[in-house]
Image 1 (tube, helix red, strand yellow):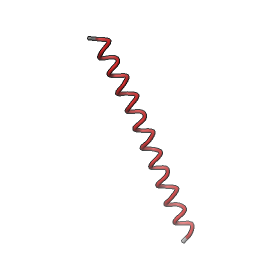
Image 2 (cartoon, rainbow, N blue to C red; image 1 turned 180 degrees about the vertical axis):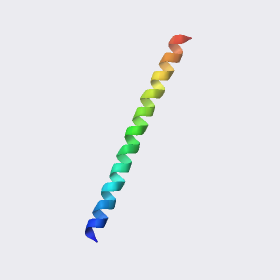
Image 3 (cartoon, rainbow, N blue to C red; image 1 turned 120 degrees about the horizontal axis):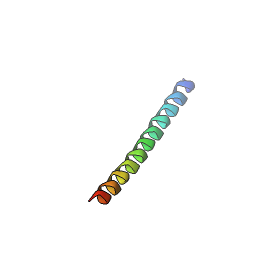
Length: 41
């Protein structure tokens, strides 16, 4: 039973870190698009 709880904690942590990386990527992409748009206009 202890192993199952540990596994679910590990899984939750991995999902959280994955979302964090995704948010970070989208933030960089958004800034990059904004800079490109401003440079074009």
